[in-house]
Length: 190
Ligand SMILES: Nc1ncnc2c1ncn2[C@@H]1O[C@H](COP(=O)(O)OP(=O)(O)O)[C@@H](O)[C@H]1O
Ligand SMILES: [Mg+2]
Image 1 (cartoon, rainbow, N blue to C red):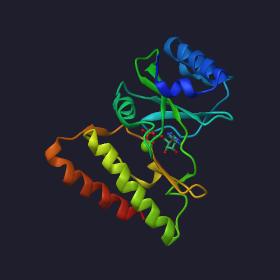
Image 2: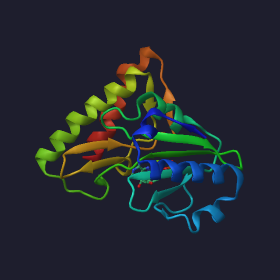
Image 3: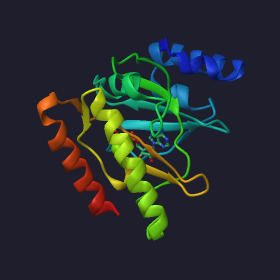
Image 4: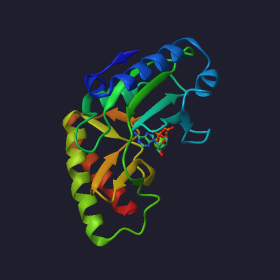
């Protein structure tokens, strides 16, 4: 398992827990790890991944069903920037698939908090445009943008964009086209 700089900001207890879980993930079947380790499943099967939250912690464990590592690549590039979760650690399961420990997005996905007030919609648009600039600056474009992947924290008026399993490299000449495409998707969401 590899840890990031953001990992060092976590409490020593949480760091120990992550290292313990990472060691288990690398050597044991997943079922045995989930039971008894204070992990709560937050997505149903049939997706690209299994996602858990660590009880009472703002940390998410995402275990992919495939060996893909776009999530890690993307979060190493822009994780922890405004509007994107911090990546704390990542590694490979016993089965050769990628897992990540990352920051839990605050608030709720836009799919769950419609209708939004006009004022919140404006703020979301503004923050989203800043987020796109951060993503495209490192030449990445998310091809799986949807309401479930944009978390809005109504209290702090803060947007967090998640799920970079389909976040691909984009050549500079397509930057404007990608920006346009992402804005189009947001327009349909709001
Ligand atoms: N960092 C996160 N913060 C809060 N919830 C998350 C986070 N990552 C994943 N989730 C929750 O788990 C669900 C599945 O995660 P996601 O990254 O979208 O996986 P998949 O690639 O399988 O679609 C998300 O729709 C969201 O509800
Ligand atoms: Mg998803």
